[in-house]
Length: 480
Image (cartoon, rainbow, N blue to C red; front, top):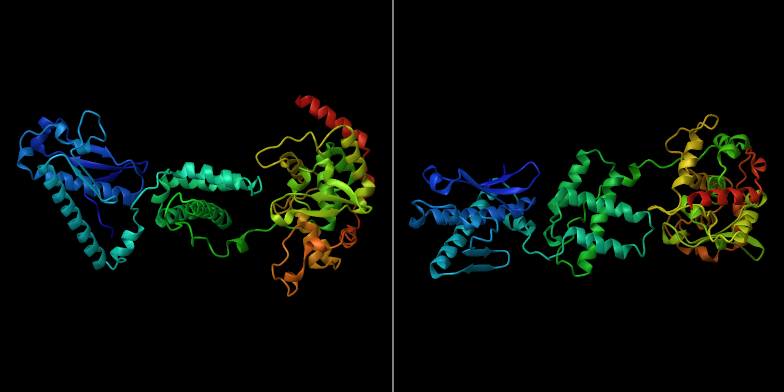
């Protein structure tokens, strides 16, 4: 059972109001049956503070004989909500320790109001104790006591601008979405006024809305990072209200992508269907490069011509940035890709004056990969391919490559070096001793070439580079 604060109401949008019902004998002179003042907050604790202040002021005013006969609307300046034509007589802010009054009489009235508020708080504490609620000290510790002057939306802009320098481009919109959802729930609060209860309420709403546990943890993690930034940069002096709220084991409950089977790969790369549909170079080369390197979609789609070059006679794809720090790696090009003409295509793009391997692609908010992944999804659903499993998508090539290398006996160090996974995860006793940058290209090349995919007719997929050069020129002319 909660303590009801006198004269406090909330509208359908969640904004709190102070509502004073004008006594019957005053209504004719005041001209209103009730007076409402917006407290300009959706936060229950902040609203209770403001309502108690106004209520104490009303009680003190109504006890003064000078207000007992024929009051007017001007006699209620504390309910005017900041009207320019009404003077504020008394100002009380217990959070900042401010009590201001214009006259000695008003100063006495202010002291009485503060005493009334103290008595009200003591009564609330006693009632909470009787109901076996937490100690009043714990409750008051939850209540905001000061503001820092920076609101959530502005803090988020500064935070994301800083993180943009270190995070993958696709991660920024996800973090922004989590913070935006919290602001929509709690309001654009002053950073220092956000309480653990606000974040917990946000979490409970997401649970009620049946959001996936991994999504909830992503949103809560974004908030925790935002408040860590605010604390570290002296924006606010506070405890992080979003810490300790993650759902345990959420990642283990998430559905992982599945690798493609040998039969599915044979249908995916069947020449009669693949060549007919994958006529643009990113559509054609994207799945092939992923199938023989385990590279992520954006790592493939964003490749530059200069990232493909030979080192001591071994042609490599030099992935210079990606989702994580470990994504930076050099992957030898599989013999099948060399036979299909990847190097010749790279040379043709270079000779045509293009800096990117797929120069017709435009960068979106998540990079260059959108259309390539979209077309691959269409190809999977097409008659004759019929890969309908929602857990089998472009990213499944990473699972396919790691699974195939494991079946061929490739050790964990080489696998992690090829696909850009972290070493030192303590999956085995030797993980801490594996230094990926010292693994030789010769050994990496031998490991890559163990990807055989028996039964898949890659030999029938070769397309002359001139065909793609013409397709790119036509597409870029159309855009221009």
